[in-house]
Image (tube, rainbow, N blue to C red; front, side, top):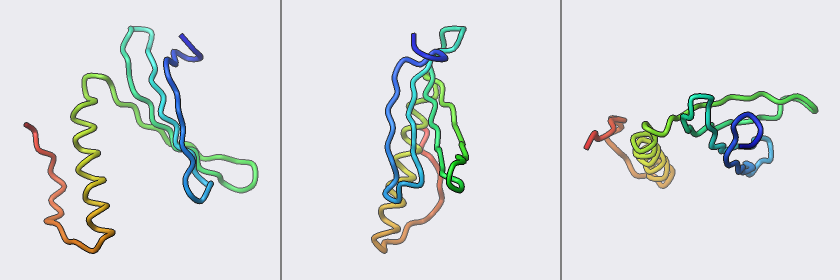
Length: 92
């Protein structure tokens, strides 16, 4: 196991190079595996502001479904198409 229970890590820089998104798979002391998503945003010349979200393995499928719905909406919205905007996630 890596640093702080890290099993896997990758990252991507935003087009503006002001943000970096880290996608880390970690394992806690109880053996639970989770996805840790961190946004690191440049604040000034040397400081960084960090935000993170944790998604546990048992919630991953529902999280991915909701993420796909949200990103599909963003793609449609940016192309000028309208949507009902309900934001509801199908449970099936």
